[in-house]
Structure formats: structure tokens, C-alpha cells
Image (cartoon, rainbow, N blue to C red; front, side, top):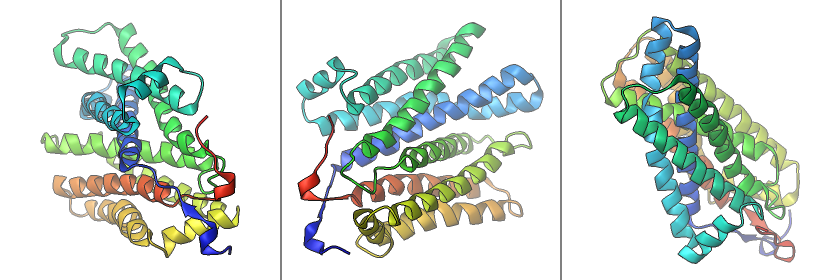
Length: 303
């Protein structure tokens, strides 16, 4: 282990953490709603229709949450001039590409939400276009939030393809949790068809846990710097946020609730499980951003 004074923490604004989280929830919710709607359009059964209806909340919440994400990103930039410069240089950096993905996704998801709220009928070609294009943009936003960090090659704990993968899985998990929570708050009880969403949330939770473990193991053996970052998560200053926020709230509690739900069905249990997933999704980003360590002589940054 290198001396402690050889490393300094790279601390982003808390707005960036909120941006990463909110953008993940919004894009994940839209993709989930699109998949359910496309499945119903292909199957045309009562079960598929119930699934699509339960997931419609994802189309409504996506632009609202994405707007909040864009707002905190704008606040973090600090001035309209910086935001305008990012918009005018769409291919010069990961930040610029991501900003355009955010804008395009926000516009399309807002149009879809408005159509769902005010339009009596929507052409099938537009529905398919919105599901496919919106999901592609949503996946781009999910991936970009991971690339935003992994592009910083001087930060060993971030410089891995497993980080974008972790953010993608986490975005889908938190997006699905948001969709399920909205349905529960609106009083739509889970039925046999819609319980597939609840089951899927459990699978995504296990997958997210597996990717997180793989990410931590990969970083421990990568370098001393990355290992020091993982140590900060497991036993250092961030250990409380990691174990309580990610492990307990985001993984253990939702898994326990899934097991308990088989014997004690209830919307309250579902809401607690979804809340745990969302809390865990936030602290995944909080801990990863906070655990960044870099060598002062090898500082990297956004191009």
C-alpha cells in the first residue's frame, strides 16, 4: 500500500451524484415501459395488456425525472455559458455527447408522455418509433453515465467496462422499482400477469449485486490505487454508506421482501422493496463517486 499522503480524493459536486441517479431512474423507467408496451403490441393478450397498463407510469415519470436530472446538471455547470458551450460541441467529449443524449431523450419522452395524457389515438408507427428510439436513447443515457466516469483514465477505480455495465443494470433496476412504486401508489394491485414485473425486479437486484461484486473484485486486483478505493468502501470512511445504503437497503432488504411477499402479499411490502432499491441505486453512485482516488502527478480529466 502506498503512503496515504500520496493520494487525494477527487470529489465531484453532490449535484453530479444526483444527476447520475436521476438520469438512471428516468431512462430505466422508460425502457421498462417500452418493453412492456412492445410485448403487448406483439402478443395482444389480456395478460400482456395488464402488464403494459401497469408499466405506463414509466412513460409519465421519465420526462419529469429526466428534467430534474438536467436541472441538477445545469446547476453543476454553474453558468448558461458553460451549458451552451457543451451543446455547441456535441462530439468533442463524453460530456457533450451525453448532454445531447439527455436533451434528445428528454424531448422524446416528454412527447410520448403528452401523447399518452391527451391523445385519444396514436398511430402504431409512432408508438413503435417512440419505443425503439426512446429505448435506444435511454440505453445511451445509462451507458453514458458510466462512461462519464470510466473515461477518466487517471481514476483507477472507475477505469473499467464493468462500471458502465453496473450503471446500466442499476438504472434498469431503479427504473423498474419506480414503475412498480407508481402503480402501487395509484392503487393498482399486482395480478398474476403483472407479478412478472415484481419477479423481474428481484432478478435485476441479484444481477446488480453480482455485477457489483465483480466490479469490486476486479478493482481490488487492478492497482494499489483502485484497491485503496475499494478499501475506503468496505472498511473506510464510506463503509457506512456502502454497507447500509447499498448492501442492506439496496440488496438484502429487497431480497428479504421478495421472499416474504410470497407468504404475505401486500402493496406496502412492495413499496418498501422498491424504496430500498431506489436508495441502493443512489448510494451505488454516491459511493463510487466518493471513492475516487488519483495520483496528483497523473491527473486526468474530461477532454
